[in-house]
Length: 370
Ligand SMILES: Nc1ncnc2c1ncn2[C@@H]1O[C@H](COP(=O)(O)OP(=O)(O)OP(=O)(O)O)[C@@H](O)[C@H]1O
Ligand SMILES: [Mg+2]
Image (cartoon, rainbow, N blue to C red; front, side, top):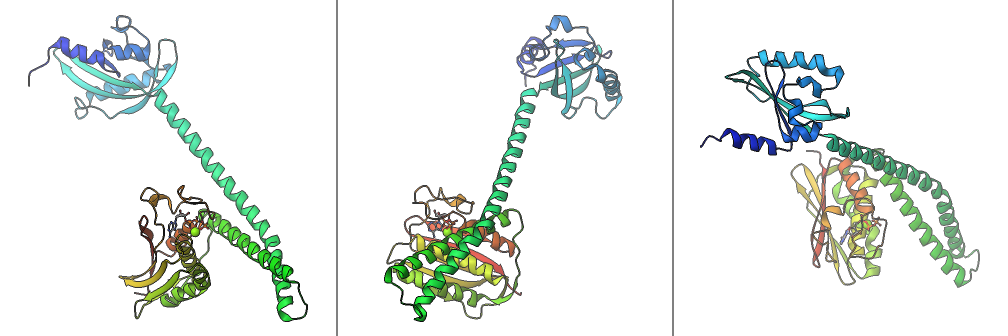
């Protein structure tokens, strides 16, 4: 390697955006590059021969000079680049600014030389502070939204349940034969019952998702049959599948071990997954639930022959309130987020595999006795 000429080295140093400053054994400035002029506002001529301390806030001057001579005396740190540390500098106009500085100690034929490489981090600090502030504001807004949702959902439950109960009572009155209800009344009461049931389910989802987010969703797991869990969910959704003309089938591996699960919550997970499969599969399609043993877990899968999920959308499907832009909005976008929270709460995993236009498979695992 050819040694660089002194002029070339000086030119390279002057090009650097950082301040590069050298001082002698007396801590007087012997080199002050263009970067240093830009940062501190002094011309090199003004600074040559001046004490380095001129560039530091008054309160640091004595401490810094003691530190520098100690650094010069220590065998180990001499010649080696010191770590970048955060210090304060002061410009010609008196303005103080945060800087990152590294210091090195060398011996030259004219005695010791300290060189300081310093970077003005004012902008970086400002950007960091802005980011931190924005993040804190965002977190606060999300928390407030969740608290608000929790409150509103909670207060909406009673009126929703009242409508549900009364619509049910009207229908039972007709069924019992105690009253002769006009067909129109029966029809209206049926629609009211359906609507109130939908409202109730949405409120329940909003409450669950806010509880999950706050880590307040309680699970009461017990040893339970994996096969029965899958069977119960399939039976509940069979009428919906039949109404949509979709073949809903199940395949359970023989001798499935028990899983440690909160039955209601896992039934909710399976219902959400089967509900999605039915929602995104056209008439004549097929939905299949399987359970197999996978090491210390039972793996459940829900496979449908529906629209599939585009690869770009896959990373977002478990986000709260997320919907694919490519599909009509038909739900709150909470089902998978809740399913994920519940499965993770059981110590399991949940994931999606999908081929657009062909099929979607959502799989999740639950721990077994072994
Ligand atoms: N089986 C599936 N096939 C195709 N797309 C799906 C399937 N399951 C989920 N998705 C996509 O993922 C999105 C999020 O699903 P998620 O269950 O969380 O919400 P949702 O069904 O839209 O609303 P909610 O479940 O709250 O009623 C869906 O809107 C859909 O775009
Ligand atoms: Mg859903």
